Amino acid sequence: MFVRTPQDVEALGQVREMPHINTRSARYLTAADGLGFSYHLNHVGAGSQAHLWYKHHWEANYIISGRGKLTDKSSGETWPLEPGTLYIVGPNDRHIFEITQDEHHASIFCPALRGDEAHDEDGAYAASGPIEPTDRRMYVLTVDAMCAEGKEMVVANGKARTLRMLTKADGLGFSFSDVHFDAGATTDLWYKNHWEGNYIVSGTGQVEDLTTGEIWQLAPGMLYNVGPKDRHRVTALTDLHILSVFCPALQGDEQHDEDGALEPSGPVPPGPPGY
Image 1 (cartoon, helix red, strand yellow):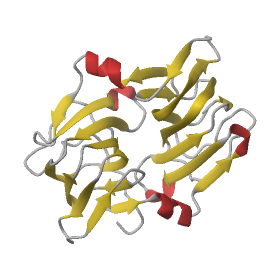
Image 2 (cartoon, helix red, strand yellow):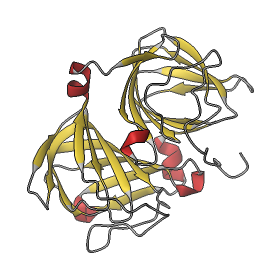
Image 3 (cartoon, helix red, strand yellow):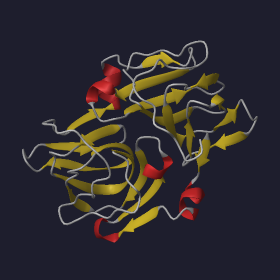
Image 4 (cartoon, rainbow, N blue to C red):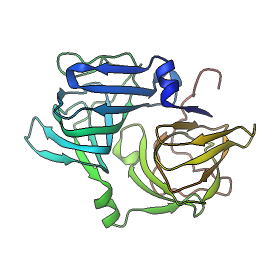
């Protein structure tokens, strides 16, 4: 397992300033990490407007803070962007991303980005891997609507609540979950069949490698990453809010077994070099 802090990302040279869209992008995970997806944390200033078209990728964006508007350039349909909104765009989706209040969001790409890309004149990134032809179009989900529909699950042997907002059926190459641990919760986990990247939105806790005994303190802005070799223990010192990405994507109805694992759902990416 490995952990990335904002300072680590800066030291790796993986922070991109994009003044043309008033955006600072911290690229916590890239293709070189081998997890099957890239994971960015972006800050966008109020007044920004970006015309984008990810011809070669799927992208999911979870709004952590701030407000704005998303527009489908083909249909003219618009959606409000606010905390708890998850929007998904792909190869068919020319869109406009507008920010009215300073905004912070998590962005997951598949295929994973190298990390040094810049948008071209169409608002696209260069291809970074194969993507299947599709006629699927952009869509938007919200935490509030999914909770109202009763889609929140209790998982991790009763220790966490999760909304599995994206699953294997979405066909993006990864799944995305909004996860909450209550203060005092602790659970042993071992993702034998997956890689998982976990961004701490709020709260504090710790994650322990049960093989080595190494412990990392968890705080907002950190990303911890676990794979098939990583028996680990998560402890919430306060209420803990995490954004969890799995590859291969989860079916969506899995429960943890006695080892803290989830059943296989596809080929497992290789992980970082030397893993």
